[in-house]
Length: 296
Ligand code: ADP
Ligand code: ZN
Image (cartoon, rainbow, N blue to C red; front, side, top):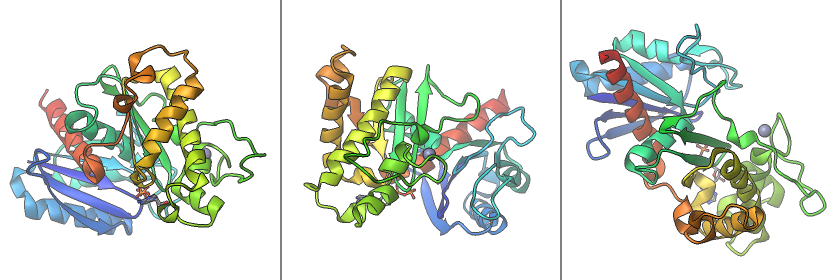
């Protein structure tokens, strides 16, 4: 039996099980690190007791993912009060006495989609979430890319034509990075209405698709993914997919001559298959991996 935590800035989703079929989950609000991790630990003790083999955590960040670092498993520079420099993985490991797997929330979703969802069987793909922020995870040669820290795909720069779109952008660090231009809050600030309430024929969506397609073009040209999975609240607007696919082909302008881009676009830019469960299922994969590497 494995424990899974999808740790978000506003809520925790915890699950116990081994597969999407048997995973039972609960949710509670994210308060202080102590109270929230205690609630998670209490849930695992009650549901799994001595059967618990490992826990996986897919966490909001930034986080330290370097196994050899003294602050491995910590949440690092978050503005979220109380959570900065919190030893998240350590707190769970000490309380439960089992191996703990740890990664970012979006890398967790990527792992979940790779194992059971829209990216099954692929060794190279990108998972992007477009919600309150924009975050991306990449699988490269069958492994989730960490590198120097972990990718921060939402903060790439994309061309911003201020004569067409004078909105300065919402990112506190960069203004008009991709997240600053295309996150849910950016849409709301630019148009004065929530993304959920804008009708499908509103000009907001052509612009949104354009910014996202610019981001995708960058990852196509750098990571060469076999597929790109787009999730998050904003992508509930399913009409965006068609706009993004078309815009992406236009931006690449015939240069990338593979059928996924020129013909089979519906298979290249796709919605997640696990929906809102991707993150917690990815945490389950992290638990499984932690258990396997402990056994080695
Ligand atoms: P979070 O990023 O906080 O984990 P979400 O992925 O649900 O959560 O993203 C929340 C953002 O997505 C909000 O800015 C909200 O306006 C937007 N959003 C949520 N649902 C929809 C929807 N059905 N259509 C368009 N935008 C949505
Ligand atoms: Zn930014």
